[in-house]
Image (cartoon, rainbow, N blue to C red; front, side):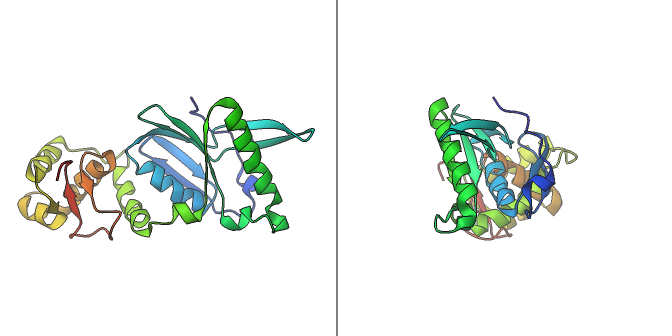
Length: 221
């Protein structure tokens, strides 16, 4: 179990962009040291199959060719099925073996994979190719996740009302608003976005931009 990040200074990630964001999934602030790490966090945060995660979860020290190499993973995740994985985030250009500037990154990922194999953990190396393959989903999560701030309390009556309206239908957000004219657009969005985030309802946010035409439905439709 990994719950506490290894302390890191911003200067340790020279040249990287820095993000300090609130995570509804683990109910604390999270430090991310590049735009790519931020985009990856959006996917982790918005994945209802993932129970918890920790950024910069562990520092390892591995003997390679007679020398000890240290490294810190970018993320650890635990899924609801109990499986776990350590994740490293790299730009493709940093994994180019023909580029002398990539030597450190390649050594780092090699060491991490070796450690995971020796300790029985799944290891995943992701680049912008995988993380940014669906810009619709990323952009939509950037809209949805801020609605899950801790100061925005869930209205159980709104939740029950919208859940009943959806029922066994496949509806657009516009249709739901038309059936909930006593609720403000803000309250409807807040409830729907939380339901999508928690996996209580399905949606087409991975297929098109979030709008009044976005469709939601329950399993089986």
